[in-house]
Image (cartoon, rainbow, N blue to C red; front, side, top):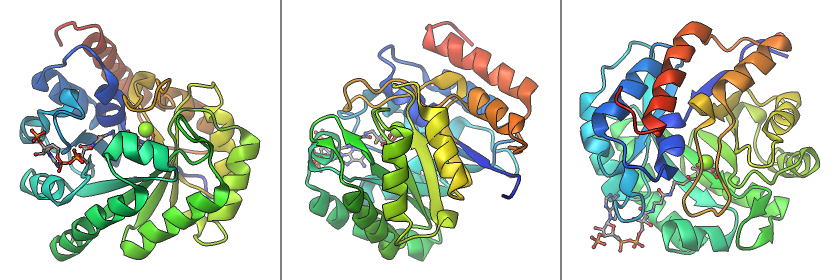
Length: 287
Ligand code: HMG
Ligand code: MG
């Protein structure tokens, strides 16, 4: 096993999108700038989505304009449609992401359209991104369980992941959106996906609602996955997925990996500073 794993920091996006207290742009900028000093190479900063859908991230343009770009850090954003992509490009995003669901119920709740319709919206994003030479990540949500449709068949995840890859995504992040995945269901899902795609293009995105994020990450690590999405101070959730608080905590995953001889390149002290900001921001304190 190679001894390095990339922790893709999603706290400023997946973490903050679910916070009910409105957080100011300058607080988000402070958090992102602190995270960019932690040794992360990829950082999901915000989303260019409907402000009605995610009011907390309505200031995406201001946030992107206000951050101090750190060398070696790739700043990523979510783009559900061409309009979002154009705004992301104007804001100087280094990487964008489209996000599909392996279940119809979550697609309707999250994107207000069917899975098939979501691909029709992603197609122009992939085309424009190719022209602009901006890499596109593809998310698949509800890879083991959906809050609306119940258990997700592994074959559905394999089909959606393969479709995103065929459309031009460079990486597929497999999302346990509501943290209901277990090592056995994650294993079955991954086995199905890996009949189509190699581990080298996969990432694991585990919400820790059920307290199994680390065990699920271990299953993926064993299978060769080397990118995991984590959030500073365990921020996280999705407002359209009832019961989805808490992405896997960056520090918890980092320390667990280090105990197993796997390096992440993160600086624990700098991460502590970012955690303090994350906690203060969450409590509405000034930073
Ligand atoms: P819609 O209602 O079907 O589309 O929404 P629409 O084209 O009719 O637009 C609705 C409104 O949004 C209109 O404004 C548009 O102008 C506006 P209104 O007339 O109501 O004032 N609009 C936009 N505004 C800004 N930027 C845009 C944009 N597009 C339309 N790009 C839509 C479809 C996709 C827009 C909407 O459903 C949406 O924005 N959804 C995003 C939901 C979201 O961000 N969810 C959280 C991220 S996914 C997640 O967390 C899971 C993940 O972490 C992995 C995992 O855990 O599984 C990634
Ligand atoms: Mg998520």
